[in-house]
Amino acid sequence: QVQLVESGGGLVQAGGSLRLSCVASGSFYGITDMGWYRQAPGKQRELVAELANAGSTNYADSAKGRFTISRDNAKNTVYLQMNSLKPEDTAVYSCHVVTVYYNGRRDNWGQGTQVTVSS
Image (tube, rainbow, N blue to C red; front, side, top):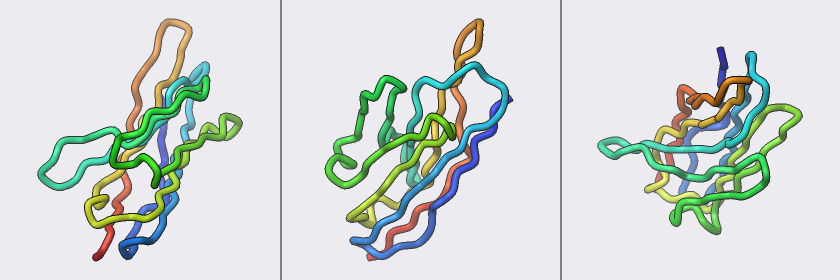
């Protein structure tokens, strides 16, 4: 079983910054993709950013130029540095980690951390 522990959410004024972290632990052979999704009230969950083990990244248009995703493979941790935050970034942010086993892969999701941006 895989546990994902997120941290770093909170309340920030528009224009401010936050750094989210997500640590994966448990029994698995390895990790491929690590990323962040968000869900605002009344909206569907959407991709914010994802980072493959090989280094390729995928950002939502709304995140490009403001957010940076990174990972520390030795610590099984993924980060999301969020700068120039806007009220429309307010959402629950969840990490997504794909773990690898001898017989396949599995998608894992964190519980989510609230990010609130005040105007």
